[in-house]
Image 1 (cartoon, rainbow, N blue to C red):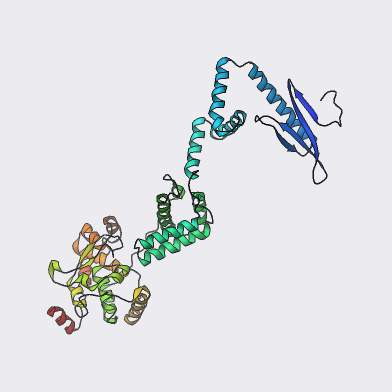
Image 2: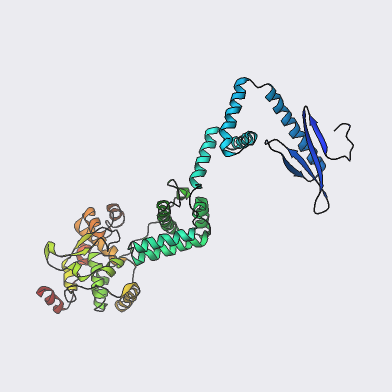
Length: 418
């Protein structure tokens, strides 16, 4: 700024053959603001600075940088000029200037270290934020997923579980589907202090929801945010069972409308939800291989048909109540829960959730000594039966379980007549 008066504006900072102008403007607050004319990106823009000192320092830096560019340009060889022309041609469809691209790439290289790293980061970003993907909120995607499951014939219990877990998820994420991140889900899990088993259950439901969004075209095929969640293992729950004496007391205390359900769970191991859907025409009380309880694919939790042999005890307990058709239990889940509580209170036996099924599987595998056969009848995997039910009770205790018979002669007579 040699020879320029101190109070003359605009000020000019010169370096080599390059000059940068500094302008002074009055701000709305009444103070002076300082603007530096910046041509580093190829187009003129005005950068604002709070003090004249800051503006002069930046103008000097820009002048030196642009002066060095002119020196480089003056020394360009033919191949350098050809490379420059090729770069300009490649960028023309995107309406960006080469200096801007170069400075942006330089910043990216500071972050990832090499060009392949930049390309990989851009590809990952494109996978997570596709340009042409529709904008769908988490709430809308949850509703669509639940509607699809309902239309597809999902059971009421399954839908209730989905509504609960996806509802909690929806309440926590008021964003678009594409904005959901694994670290945010993990932070939500931690904030809610979910148990290990709850985390497993929520992850299972969110995986289902994510796959639904992928099929709808709302998320890319490579969406893997759930893979960023910490892996947890649920603690093995202690297996609760009833003793044969407790079973006998429960059966003796049950009302006639609930007793068939109780007997089927005790001697065929059906889940409560499966009994709720069971029809009498699927209960066949003939002796030998013709006697079995059929759980159709549509009514099984695993969506796989299976047959459970009808043992002598089951035939005797059901004989007075069997009908040609109609629901075995028509009361629904809430009424069944009440019936369980009433029966347990009468029998003086604390009710244990899922203990009838646990007891039957444990007794069945002890009786047959065949894990694969028991798993097929129970609708479980062999690994689950082997890990949780094998050697829970002895074969002698299993024999006692299947020997719990009605004490009334009339029941036995009716069974034999059938």
